[in-house]
Image (cartoon, rainbow over all chains, first blue to last red):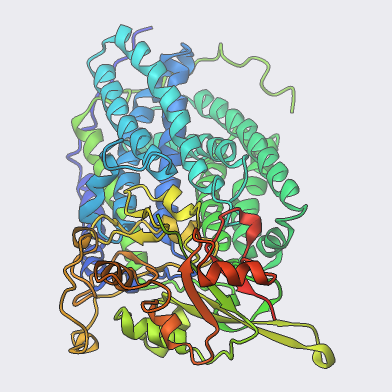
Length: 400
Length: 233
């Protein structure tokens, strides 16, 4: 099957308005970054109790979206699943944009962003026992590989696409497991410390990447007035529900093991403490329960609208999953000495939401939006139409 | 090579916080505003925690002074991606402020909360310290910049150095470390609760003290092997 891809026209008023608004928000983010650079991180909510704030949350979130998106593109280019072919190019393009955004987010969170080149002096200036330094290799390599992958796809070099695709997918898996290892290997923070973290991150990456892909494809096609095949979206919806179930299993196992000594108090804090709403309402509610209800509902899973709602709920919910890891994980006080530590040293850390950090965070997303829209205009990533392919799922309505 | 270590006698400690003050004035650490203290964005190289146990009739408070533990297997050195934190040959865990990129991974990994991130550019007045020498001209100046800080930059992580500048200068001048030359917190302790010296030398005062009495270290379950020991009350 030959499928042609074309850029969108990008001359409509709506396109220009969207790009202009996003660019303005991105500019506000840039100004916020300048303020934080000149005045120091006091303009952020992070402090010595919770040293990592929104930029790190966004970084691991974007890495997850990127890795998930790229892994799904492999269904077409590596495993030859033709039914996903219409969205494969968008998936790779999104992956490139998102990993770039993740690296920007990490650089923004550094106290001295002008020294971020030090993260890429592999083996020479880097301490390779650090998960962060290893992830420098993974992220840098991933960016280069996914760019090459996109280039090969756009040049239609199908033999190379498959080869680079295999490498890119393996690398994407490593990237997100490495990100999980940044947290999972820290014995000091009981909520982080778990060998499950790399796998949990990987599952969350696939879930959020797939959900974002569904949203991006449906919205882009609708706004550019292209016809679309509903069956592809329904298939993706079923895949999404399976991946969420996998993620729920991993999270439950992780929390269950933590319910036993010595991490019990920290886990009880996560589930009932000051930040428990992040976990219950955000992570469990938005990322697991709402989409699972929709995707297993016999009628709702057959409509584009409800699948879109489920996907949006997942994308927001996985962001809360990152928040519910970073903020409570760091806020739980360290027990230097047995007993109750009085005063500020034994308190649960607080994380004030400050305007500079919020504008910076929104600005980063807007910047990625600008890149995405420009890419649609100048690259052939979208199919002219998605053909409905009834051959894929004849047994669809029967089970589940 | 000497392995510098500290022994804190909790029986003698009166909880006066002179050690924290001495540390701040010796190393030019900013004192921080009440607002910063509430938000935990102020810098502490040395802190004193109060730990309460039990209910009213049997209530008890213990005062634990906490410098950096200068662990033998420090988790902060393991996680630092930029080689900015390293262990010197004499066991002091140092922070190279010129290499530090400010990723704060070490703050996340340190089980003792010994590290502080520098959240703001310091104001000039706070740093008018004519009593401090401009620059000691130490060998490892390239690592850490002019010392003691005449000027601080925001965005890097700082920590206790066991007053390495005193030790290095004392060794150059041929003084006896642990007797004539001690870190500022040891020098300032009014009740003589702190002792500093070479843990690898069995004849040093700290080694004899540790051999003579029961002692413990903080969070030994983390297997960080701290070089700061406490003598219980």
